[in-house]
Image (cartoon, rainbow, N blue to C red; front, side, top):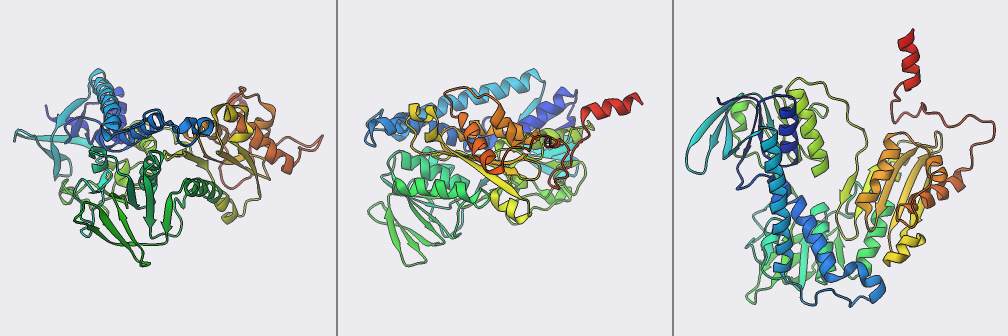
Length: 495
């Protein structure tokens, strides 16, 4: 009764997608989750909570309307931590209910308890009531996620010095905050609290933040943050954090600067939650940050029947990519043939303003020696931007001069994480600049920015000369291996 085709440890994005995929293929699947409710970090302390907090903050603060009514405009004059938590709890209940229903209707078994390896194919599950179960799996997927990195020199107390998990439980909104770490999580929370009119300072030892994002987008984003008086101490390290007798916190920076603040959020990295799995019994070993090394195409570990997916395997650590990793791993694990995933996926940063990107950055184009041209559109150039009162927002498209194909789309501004999917589709379907020039976009919309940016690039690239062949759908561009055109396949099949 305790033998399964697939054992999934963790019910976050990777785990739940893997479990449901395997179940839909008719396999016997069990999900082991040590948390009180299913959903993992994504639902309870990560993706969903932070995005819910962001939306609540923007709504209650009147942030989106300040372009019309002034910086002093607020929907709710006094915003409390309880206001943020109330909407969060409603959202989490909904997410858990949906997930439990998905498991139920797909006949996915669910065990609550702490899992660890006994042998490479047997796991022990220690339940809350002390009962111990043994489960055997033909294949095992580790989707245990990560937890905040908590170094010894940071005096965490859950109130004035917190990590990103504890931030969701604070009792009062601080008037000032220092965020240590300018990664995705740090920047998201820093800008959310800035939108609530908290005075925010960000400290990071790296000279630049979000280095994987197109530099021009980061520069525009940085300008917007500084324009609203956020302090960015980049290239500077927080050497000492000390709680003061008056309830405030002192942060000493290696440049000699000392900052006194109401709250410190330490968001400088996360570590894989693999320390309780007894990996040695399965012949596995995690790196110094608790992450597992896998084959990036199949997500197999060094033990062929054991897979890992999601944040525990490292970059990009997105809920969206974790889901796809889990699905692919599950198909390989149960012997199903899977299609190769699209090469380019969107990356979303839910800061204020949002950033989203797909494809190659301008810096990567230069490194690869690809001749290119860029098209730029600013949201204020669109009628919808004026209607919404947007004073900022930028969309950047990068095209190959050789093939005229779109190779990169980068957006900063309102709705960036929604808008990017238009560019993602055109990029993966190998569309050219002519798509944006010749197609109609709804008016008035922010999506019109695609036409504006397309025309901006087209004006520099010039029209395809009359009589010249149209841009090839099978270019010799070394970036992407072209598939055989469908009509050619048919002819070949006919022969």
